[in-house]
Image 1 (tube, helix red, strand yellow):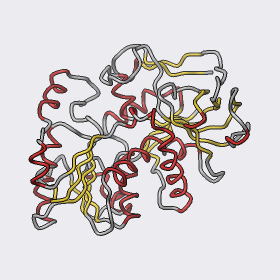
Image 2 (spheres, rainbow, N blue to C red):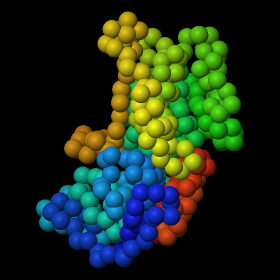
Image 3 (cartoon, rainbow, N blue to C red):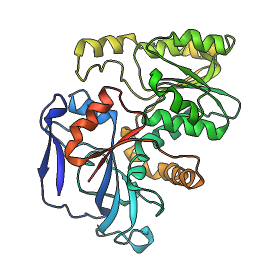
Image 4 (cartoon, rainbow, N blue to C red):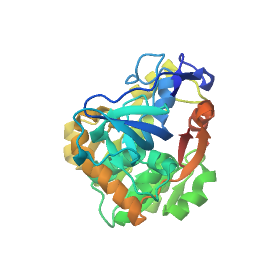
Length: 341
């Protein structure tokens, strides 16, 4: 098989394709021949040496794949419904940048024949994260207002589609060149965060009432601004820290500034404002995969219904993974970037 290795911390050029023996599935595992692998901002941070959850460098990262079952290991019965050749998507806690992976069967979901492998690889991380943020933590209901930061990213688009299906009014921050496409996806209030004061725009558009749910992958100072537009009974869901990454370079100073700028609302503030603040890290939920099976099933059902359709920004050949990383770190993607084998 082939794997994409992070050989050292650095720019996209440190990614290297290497050959390795095909792994065999262990007890309770399925071996999957990979046709597509999702690329996430966490992978970019890992390559830059800024993602503490990643394996020690040199390593192979990758959280999500799609392909076909090549075989199953001991303790996998017929009731798993994964005979050889079954088309599947899977969550992988690293190791997904490979042409074959072995994962526990509870992390594997069969997909419809009509779903492309690129679409399937675009679903796990983005749509699991968005579903937990919008529906479980955010508890968004019809008629409420939701603000989605980085609306043109993979999680942002997933959150928009989920919010639209619920019947919410959607606000989104994104670069101006993404606005036309995001408007077609259902965002009613679009704000160019680079040139506009989004706090003022949201405040004006809501007559000072604010929004009920905020989905924020930016972190840092952005979270303090979120609290300025959070309505009573509002829910703020934070799931990332992209603020200190600029121009493809890591900076300890920027990271520390971002961390120090995060607000620390006390419980008295939360009580008096009637707010909920939640943190979400899908990578720390691997022990809860069995509890998340219903989330995956609902996402696939939503795809079949037509409510949830990932926007694929680019399908990049496996050997050009560096270009895929470059697209994400320079914010040149509208939607998901996928590696194809």
